[in-house]
Image (cartoon, helix red, strand yellow):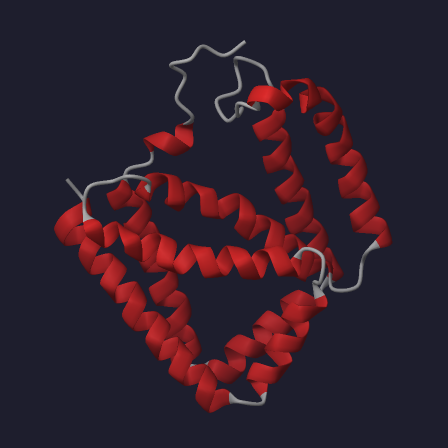
Length: 200
């Protein structure tokens, strides 16, 4: 049984560090898409089409989920399930079963499903770092992640959407460049806030 003062590692991630990492990753990704849109989209489409990449990412997702569910006191990533504590063991047992079934029986567009699940797992880290923090500029983090999580929720049951969207953007490179420029500007704003206000 966890004691009431237990703090999950996600809650210890500083806002400044979360913003800095998020800003750097987004800036590099959007600058690459801005200056080499065709090559970036080709690489993304190849990753989406790769069954092995999708399987590897999905296995990573389920290992992450299993670590969150594993209730050992020696596990720093374990999460509190509160009223659903009785489901911890069944859910933990189900992890490898569901992962195996998806990896072997749901191969088409598997990367879209795995990426959606990965974003759902990842998003909680920066959102927790920004939760109830004092600088009003922290709103930049949820402004990015809320739409991303909505899209990720769609990709898990409908992974073909990622494939179709990438194909559509490949036919509209000017729009891709424009969105990449906006994304780079947004990433620069996060980096600026991280350096000036959040890193204390």
